[in-house]
Length: 225
Image (cartoon, rainbow, N blue to C red):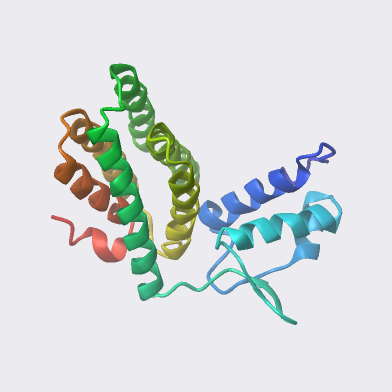
């Protein structure tokens, strides 16, 4: 992307997508780090205006914080911040699960589509690709899986909030070491979520959701039972 010249109307959106990937998955940024508008514009060979818009979008998503007269920074979430974000995501997403089960909204085609996403996720986690590529691929498959469920529930505001919380939770965990076995473990857990939803076992679906969310956090993954 750094070598592209963006000229279409969605330039700021493309910049936001690029920066979001860099912040969450590349390891380029760290908590508390200063994000310089001019440096990004120069690196992407574009004007500062779309970068400024992109930074504002990421601020609205909670992935950046603006400090007057100092600039824009990566938030430094602490333990309590992370647990609060986790709690909110769990409350909203478990409600989505409840609606999907009670209203019988998932069809056999949906379960087949979900399983295909997980098959690809697990295959990627077990591949010989470099770790950086595996982490990036996992993140795409993971949010595709969860967004499928959020969107199927028809709860548009829950969908929007959960998307932002997904990114914030990842940001809160960004300094934790993500190991190959963690990715595979978390990928495989999606089969249990599918199975629980298919058998309308809400309690188990909620339990597997918690285990999955925590499986990529080194501080808590060892305590999952």
